[in-house]
Length: 344
Image (cartoon, rainbow, N blue to C red; front, side, top):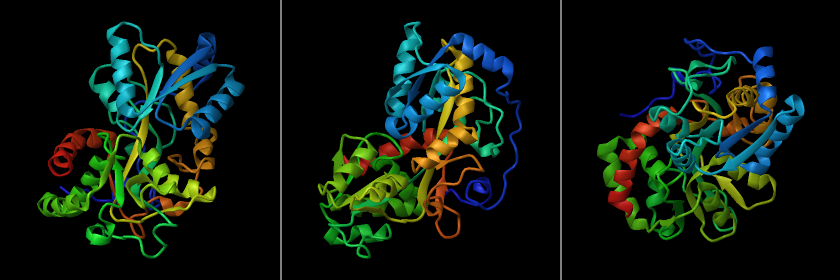
């Protein structure tokens, strides 16, 4: 089944407002603030970039509320595994977690708390059952080194990638995630339908794509360093942020791109549940979302535009396949099976 763009993403694709959520939400009222201050500290397990996002948010939150924030960075799968192991040992350390799949995995394991902040976001950015809220968007596209691939000569479509001149010149990461080879396979399946995607992937496998056991961001860094001309599945905003700093890199508007988002939850057995709730409330507030925008990330708050609006699909000039965290969690195992069939 090929996902469509249309109405479900109307709000943050700039095509109109979506309906409010249909379940009870909780405001960061004075009682919550007082309870959070009494706890005095909160631990955040995060997949966000520390210097650009986590540290600035932590410092602003500490300054505003006097609550100390500690944090641990890992990818979504590592965070879920760490929380699960700590829960089994009866030693939950974190109060909040984020990631593209983390909240869904922990919700299914019974480790996430049923709570969301009272903030005016479209219903698609909340778990329908009330266990998570989105905090930023990710648009996954190829990227390229502009010194090695002059602008205008880069592959612009999936079919372009089959050109023999790109053989041995492309790379992706191999972790089972949306920002890896598996995510690219998923994008192709959604774009073409599985019957057409499989012959295409069989041809793409002949292009000798390099698989790297690093993060999507690290693949982009290797492309910037000139190790590989093209990265096949990166966050498009990362290429723009690096280019602003002088790096020879750009992204490719290969359509439809894959659009996912990071979501946050409070853990059910959180050591500082009130401070966790207050921190999530802050992260999705105007002030917190501005940190994402200033860092070149794609915020979810309607009143905080991204630095570069062209990075965000609008359904007209730039099309994308949108997947909620639940849909991503459901489909990724199949993408991984297909990836292993053709590229392992």
